[in-house]
Length: 139
Image 1 (cartoon, rainbow, N blue to C red):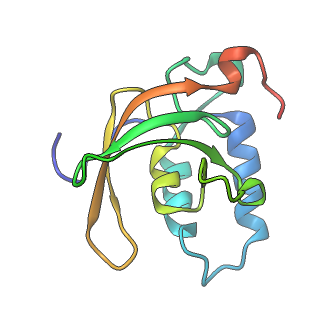
Image 2 (image 1 turned 45 degrees about the vertical axis):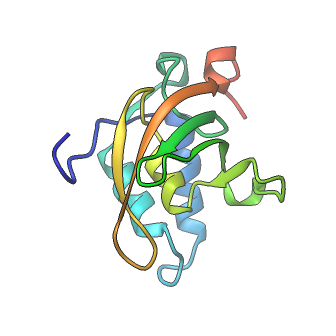
């Protein structure tokens, strides 16, 4: 993959609407991750929830991914900020890697800016749970 070429992303119309509402509710400045999330939403292909492929990361999906620089593997659920908890098993959509995961397909890789500079490269290993795959479209 060429450096800084981002793979295609697909998001559901429900996720797009809720994420737009989230962005509207946030202050225009001072929120880490806001600009990155806006950029991802701007480039996303939006489809109806029933049309989401089963291997795409959507909101509330649980995904296994690897950070290339460390080889460390994570399994986290992508959530809205209000749904973050202390379990260590959730990641906010506003976190740098959270925005990077949204809409990616299993097997995809992406380089993403890290707080403080530099890039982090992640690869999607598996979408272990996706609400749309189980018929849950309105969450």
